[in-house]
Length: 325
Ligand code: ADP
Ligand code: MG
Image (cartoon, rainbow, N blue to C red; front, top):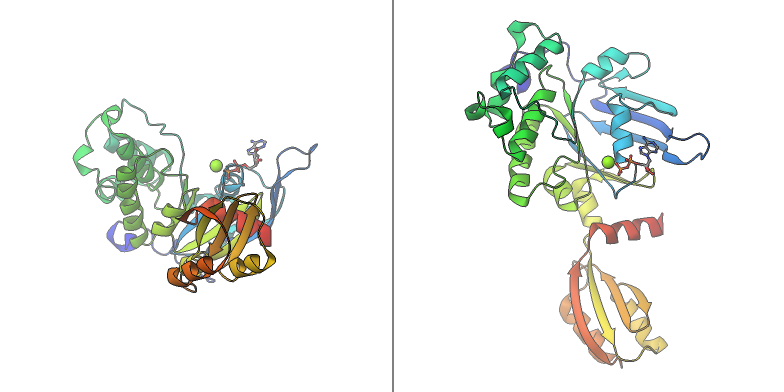
C-alpha cells in the first residue's frame, strides 16, 4: 500500500467513516444564468474509497464539469459535495489536498527532467523534503530509467504517466483523470491502464472520465453513465455489463411490407426497430440462441436480402437508456 511503502502521513488520510471518497448530493451547475441550461442537473453520486470509478458519457454530457467541481476548478451552482469526508465549502483546503488532478493537456515543462519536476512540484505543495516521494513515484509509473532525461524527449505515454506522478507528490488519497487516454493509441493505452491499476493497488481511489466503453470495462469497478447533465446509470461494473449484454441483428429486406404475424415473430427475438427495408433487433445472446433466431426468421415470409450481427456499442446503450429513462 502507498500508505506504508511510501512515507505518508497515514493518520491524515485514514479512510473516511462512511468509506466514501466522494459524496455528491443534489448537485447542479448552470454556466450561463441567462440561458438557464443545466450542465449538471440535480446529481447525487457516491464514489467508494479504494475504487476505480468511471464516469462514462458522450461529448457534452457534463463529465468534465462534474470532475472540475470535485477538484475545485469550477464552482457549483447548488448542492453539496464532500471529498474524503470534507465538505468542499466548509473545508476547502482539506478537500483540495485530498485530490490529485491530472490535466487533459500534456503541459510539461520541457527543460526539466522528470525527477526535477517532481521535486519542484513537491516544494510547491509544501511537502517537507523528508517526505518527498519523487523516486517512489517514478518507479510506480515506470519512469525510473527516464528520471534524468529532459522531459521534451519523453513519449506521449510517458508524459501522461509523469503527469500522474506529478499529481501524486502530496500523496492524495484520490486521483482524478479527465479522458486520460483520449487520442492515445491502443498499445499505449494498455500501458497506461496498467499504471492506473498499480496506483489503485497502492490504495489510491481513481476517478476517471472516458467515452470509451472498453476502457471503463477494462479498468473500472464502478461505472456511472452521465447524459445531458443527468446520471442515467450508476452500478458496479458486473451488473452494468449484464444489463448491456446485448447484440444487434441487422436485416435488409426487399419489400417493406411486413405482416403482423411476422412482426410478432421478430418481436419474440428482442426489441425491434423497423425503417423501410431495414430491420434492427436488439437481443440478449444469453437468452436467445442463434439457432432459434435462424429458425424464427426462416419461418417468416420476409424476403431477406442481407443479414449481419454486431456488438452493442456505447452509443446504442445510450440510445436504449435515454429511451427508457
Ligand atoms: P463533457 O466533459 O462530458 O464533454 P462538459 O462538462 O465539458 O461535458 O460540458 C457539459 C455542458 O456544459 C456542455 O453543454 C458544454 O457546452 C457546457 N460547458 C462546459 N464548460 C463550459 C463553460 N466554461 N462555459 C459555458 N458552458 C460550458
Ligand atoms: Mg470533457
